[in-house]
Image 1 (cartoon, rainbow, N blue to C red):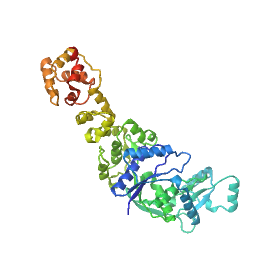
Image 2: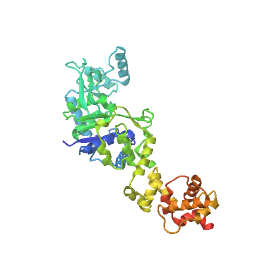
Image 3: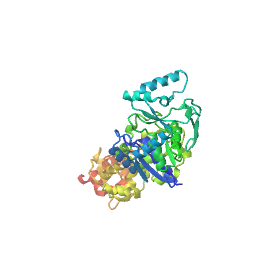
Image 4: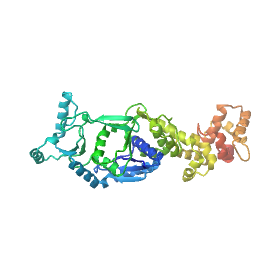
Length: 455
């Protein structure tokens, strides 16, 4: 059987680091198994879902290299959901409830005061036609609940009813439906909650493996019963650990500022995001990977920790720098050409160890070929260095030979020798090794920056 996983974001906002990790785990598993990865846009919330957010999700996944094989929008499938509603009603598994939020809250509190689980007492099942007519006369519209099979004959006598599954990440899991309320599938305004459309889609698109955050564990038992009530094949379930910040605190209030779009605009490499997302919260070291295939080869559910995964923005930026420092010229060439930097492999080898973002190459391109403001504290020293600049073509050995001559002529050594030469040639305190930069700068520019053309 072909493995099919799905990523199901709601197009009501931007993808953030938590979404990325779920998408990536699903994508890696599908690719490792030779299966398919589906993008499902859960856009039943018409008031908040927008085409702009949907396009943003697609753009983010493309930028990350997480291509998908199938796509669907829930807003195109309301007829199918209504068919499922009719089937559940006919089977007696979906019933109308007219309770107000205040009434529900009061009942929950009374049950808790008596030491009972705060579950819904199925008041809707007890309503007479006259009571329903009275509620509707008041203007009430029903919400609809799914009747859990957590009883024998009498639905008002709850019993322990354990539903278990072998979780791909957490191993054997069991949830007691006797301690759960019947889930609401349809709101009073007629809109669907997550559960029903999701299950219908998973059945119709033959999703084999549902992989999501561990905050969905408690929902899974009820969803298993919805699958069974609709006659669908049960998929495998996996619930991965959630993200916390580097300080161990929940990220929930900060996710808006940790969007894929914000990383892209900052200049972070997509493979830095992929590398971190694939390895945090696992037994693998967090390190940069240049290709998706390298990350795919690492993936295994057994490596996922049960402890929260720590996302650290500083670590991402450090990882980004390391990835660029290890990037080959072959991988960088097309991007250098796009920036009109055509200085060849020697340029990349000279500067890539000193960039944190790819666009930083433009800084060093300008240092080599553009007009900079040299910093010269001692013009006499600079003039002597200019006099000693070798003739002819330069290579990696030129710097060492030249600085040896300058040292012997001036008596300067160490920092007093190298710092003034770097400031004069680059206008900067730090940067790539000058034995690599000097051949790229060339004799004429070096002479001019030292003031040798005025000596």
